[in-house]
Length: 413
Image (cartoon, rainbow, N blue to C red; front, side, top):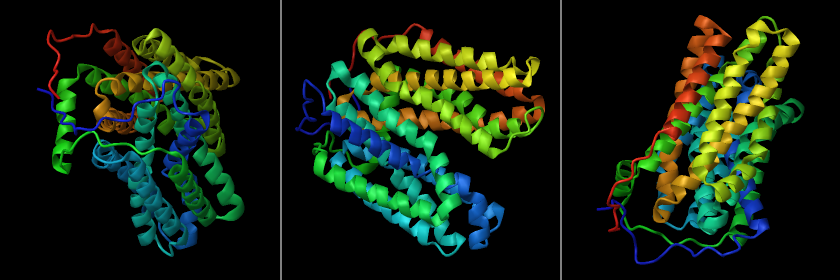
């Protein structure tokens, strides 16, 4: 028996032509602005510490609590998209997020700022409500392309948020960054209220049962398990690279500052911009093929960067840039394909399926950050690239492993 209980109503029937281009653009911008909120503080920590008279250790809790709030929000709040109207949830979270960002801008001391940071992380999960909303509005034939376009906005928000925050903070101060972010989310809420259609609930489960159904979905859908495992493995290498890059560039033989390491984030924008292309290929050739190509490209890119210790400084930098573009493209393409796969498993449970997939990603991200720092200290850059290469190859093995399909599929819902 399926663990999913449905209401008597059905989700919106997608328009055969898909949502309009302006609506897709709105969803992409909304996802980007929401997820950017959890990264604004990172390049401003030095300014923050001096301005509010807090220690570096205390200020370091600001991004930590924001990320923790986001992870908890994915697990505890994102599944509500199946229980209630996603439009209402997005509007409610946008209001809370704008208020939390404004509180951060007005914080006189570290205490209120830490509270605001936690709430920012929780409410920023509206990005994880927008992506399933786009998948619901999209017809099956174009779901990969539309989800890929919305994910481009989300990924650009991650990649460009630090650059924008650092620039604004340097010229106008850190409070201006949070104030401008609050204004942008308020504007997003108005646009969503005017343009986004309503969504009907697809389950009547109580909250505790709704969270409990996450485990049931995991047990019921082997394709979900494969997607979460493979994407989590790719996230290990992705996080290990980005969490150690600045330290590596600061030392021999590069001697580069934080600005240079931040600029490498722009290289990842190439991968983000290619996300809709991956979605189109998934629509035409099948998402499974895209997952294998993406994992293979990531493994090749990580392995190539392992050659840097034997190259000249200039050649190493070029290889680093090309490798960052390559693995980011591979990781993001695989993510789009995995979302295409899991959203097709149970349309009435897309928010919960999305939660499971991204919880797997966050486990990989946190593991990669911890292992990357440890390996960099023990074995240098070769240790980091070795970990990333092995993790990507393991993801490729997961995707190449023959899929077991049960003889009888669950049919009672």
